[in-house]
Length: 244
Length: 315
Image (cartoon, each protein chain N blue to C red):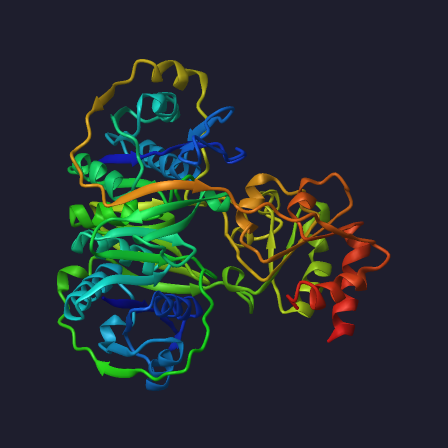
């Protein structure tokens, strides 16, 4: 079985978000980049499947510029066999999906996170499925293989849905599909020599243009209420904030 | 320019987020046609007129009662052509967002999800990014556009008006049934966390799952859903589906009350779309106070029962 895991290279969840150049560029100053947390779940599940099924290989794919390579090496250290980097900045869901689809043919499972935590588009898996003409399911909280059928559990509003589909398929993953894996020393050493191929992107018409970034308006100062006067909170929520 | 709105139903009722999508399309100023797939009552269909739909296409085929994303995408793509619509509006949801993404690929449309405001000149939409920590202004360049709007991005306001309901027969393609829904399971609890207007969340400050009763009492008095922080769900004090935060449920209620939660940036990412935030924590230095509208420095075990009492008295 061949598994492709698509990973994003995103700011750590604790990062303060800022923009420079008049709000046109993300400020990377002091920001640590990580494998997208949801992609990390997808990778962990792929490694579990590999460990349980001899002969399974896991390839990691990232659409990004050269600065994403430490993130790709980390995915290799966690247990992927080889990696592919499409040398382009991932600015739009369709652009990224088109790059992935170009390289995803021949894989039984294409796994990724439900969304990247930078642009939060949440649709790359659906677009890849559409481009390849194969099923796409997200957000997947459980994925078990039964021959060539995948049995999955998907989160829906107010509950969950059990879904089955035949391989090949695309899944956007989230917890608790697997536990995050931490690379061990042997993994880190072997990751240095695992193959990482770099390819140029497939020409794609750009259908959206990000003009500018903005930060939310600053929050007003917190109004403190004494613990001895809790009833005042209720009154103010009712008359001042008008939320009760 | 006509606008098509994909309207979702749940147990025969139109979802509130879909009403917001209809209201959003109405405010865009073009003629609005809504499309509903699967069994729905005529009164529900007609009610869409009140929110600004002029026409409602109803594809009543019972095979559409279990929503298969690929099937829905094909039906809506056909409806876009039949209605000569340039723009498709839908709610960000587990069904509509992937349906919209597939339609966008099929008709070569510009796509944007998490949209929070009406488009400005040149069809520039504002999207929520970095899990609510920032916005981007995105120009949708193609003639066709698909927009998935974030919850609370538009108010489902009644504008009067009535809709003409039209039966919309569909011929379904067997190959589109590429996923099989074998069951659905409703989350327990009367009030669902992602849709709740009021959420009461607890953190490690509550010291253990056995103390959740005082939080649940408050939630009950407020008709609120209960949530929790990531450590609480990681320690299995509370079920995973109650975890509010960056990698858990993102909520956007009118009122969010956080009890004994310090306010790690990952937690804030899940609640920063709330209209009003109340923080109760015994540590005056808890970072959550900086993100709050109202704060009380105090022990949860002392403050919560008093608060529940005050809420009951008010009612």
